[in-house]
Length: 143
Length: 147
Image 1 (tube, rainbow over the protein chains, first blue to last red):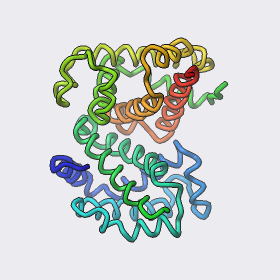
Image 2: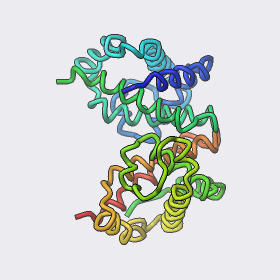
Image 3: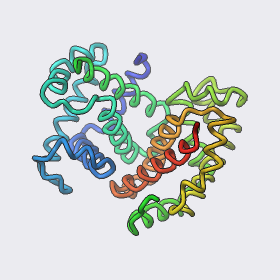
């Protein structure tokens, strides 16, 4: 799915936001909760107010996992294997093709906000493909 | 009928007031064709769509993008009757154009990303939320008359 060019672009874009990665995580989640209220049902135990420590903390985790995936684009299945188990058996978040679409959309918006014109159609396409690949791996063990 | 809070209406119109419809429309449609290449199936008579550069520069893509976003403007003028506004267009997309409504959702999401890249920090989470709602309502209205 991901061409060599796509992989390069995804790595490039991630580098562009290195240093802001924590903010990216928190903002992505915040936007997801604001735009798609049903996603909050998975976090009844969280303080979901703007700036909450729990959102920051969780955003950091998500971004670290994505960063790890980006370092292992040639072997996503293995890199995300544990997370795949976690989502399938413990978290049981609705099939990643739904939740990842929403999370992916919000991540794209955050990247677009930060990069403006530099968020080119080519980068947009590569990130979209990357997030689809991540979603597919996370969904592998659902049933 | 969809309920819009005063805040949502304000967030939508304040962004819309600053949108260059021609530029944004062209960009959104170009991105649809680039990010989801299978959507090119509806535009076989548009000429050269062979690369992102070709698509972005294609005058038919630009013109059609402008048309599509102009129509969005109608929805924004008629937030309380988006269903009615899009009734004929819905029939057209079903009966003549044969467009799978999933594509409306894809274009809507892309439009939100284009706005985010143009407006940066001004495109706040609350803004995004109002606009995601709007593109969802428009997509729903366009799909409504399908049979």
